[in-house]
Length: 169
Image (cartoon, rainbow, N blue to C red):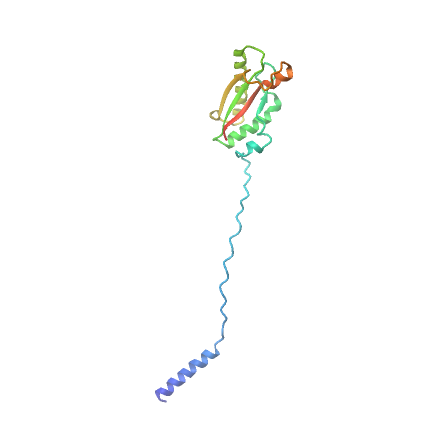
């Protein structure tokens, strides 16, 4: 066989092999699957957030009342103080001022002292439940800022109080 014949046979053989090859239809690669959705639901770890000061029923209660001429906290306010103490534990940057008040009876000096004792009683209860003294300031207004100005027991009882004022959430 001469060279031309061999060359023609090689070409013919290559063409026949190519013709017999199975044609594969190429499909585009599948698009990558989208990432799973990210769950943005806040995890409830049981800690208070600053928003809770406005929404939580317990934290919204910020007045503690006292009996006549006493600085003992009424038992029904212990749960409220526990909530506020937990808020202070959960939020180390939170700060509060406790404003002590008294009714109009007694001298100005006596009522200022009584207001301070009431504020200190609330401060002690908060610290006993885990609040930090560095987060709490006590101020006494005595009889100077009454919520009620009538001269009767119902009005006086509303003025014997300590108010919780958050200065930093």
